[in-house]
Amino acid sequence: MGDTQGISHSPGAGSSATGEGLRRRGRRRWITGAALSGAVLLVAASGAGWAVYARLDGNITADEAAAAELARYERERPTALVRDAQNILLIGSDTRAGDGNRKYGKDLGTERSDTTILLHLAADRDSATAVSLPRDLMVDIPSCRQEDGRRSDPVFAMFNHAFQVGGSACTIRTVEKLTDIRVDHHMVVDFSGFKEMVDAVDGVEVCLKAPVDDEAAKLKLPAGRVTLDGEQALGYVRARKSLGNGSDTDRMERQQRFLAALVSKVRSGDVLLNPVKLYPVLDAATSSLTTDPELASLGGLYQLVRGLRDLPTERVRFLTVPRESYVYDANRDQLVEPEAEKLFALLRADRPVMVAPENSQDVPGEDTGSAGTDGASPAPTFRGNTASEQTCG
Image 1 (cartoon, rainbow, N blue to C red):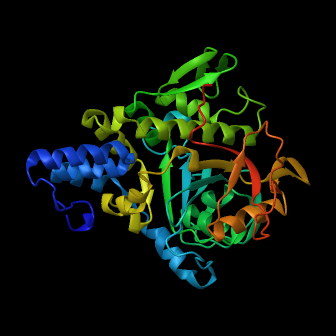
Image 2: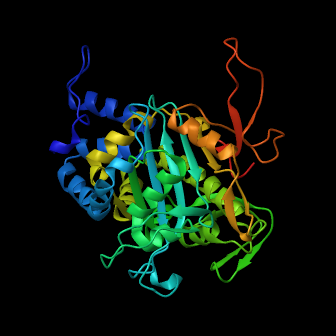
């Protein structure tokens, strides 16, 4: 397994080289490891490790077309300012292609980005910031290569039009033009993959203030604590009319809270220490992934996440880019400035992004607190939450 460098380790001084010693060290790594790094350690240590590794490794689809398109525009792309900091664009595709996705509507021959999140990993891997980008945000979309080989015209349109017209490469170029942040990697996941991941962890618990009956989202739930299976979870994160105030912003905040709960469930010892539960999670995750070529292997994914295994959940932050109703159409969004640029500047410089709950008195993007002893301005605070905040209080 040449692409798993850094996974296997020789015993250190004073360490037992016996099978039992290796197993004890392996168990300690599983307890503190993130799901993916734990899985790689598991398959590396198992007797049938190669067969399992090959299966999971072969599940991931490399997005070679996007890589080629981005290479054509390398000169116009932003430069990464901080070494080892990473920005990953996570795209939830609403494709209806494939048996698992057809029930959600007709396959119209195009995909749209139902959910897009820019995930920033700090260079020292002591924090992670996930920024949701509204699909209704009005943005400048560049000329992009379409599936038929022709090029689209530049257009000012809704953000999710970029994925529809030019796939992941067009979405990445649109995000980079909007934020001036270099996107290092990207991942695309579809409806079916999301559902299978939730089912693989035996569901995720949420709390509902009122019953939900949404035929469009295929969702009927009682009030109170509810453990959602994959099908219900998909309806929960996609519903707009029956949950909250019906806005896309409310939907994104619900998605963020659910993802935080899913992360906590996957990182729990109940999953990490149980190969029977861990393998289906990884199989579902890798089967649903289309990534840039560098990440399209377990070795590539492991190299990305291995530094996150000790990251406290309170330092995993979720927020939506500062937005407001578009001045010419209340059903569309536009960035709130200068707050949005403050956020993008923090991410470019790999500085901490502070978040406060919706009921906090802190104003999004407004400087809060006192200046430090060096006279520097305090960091702005944005509306958001962390992975440590429970969906059920």
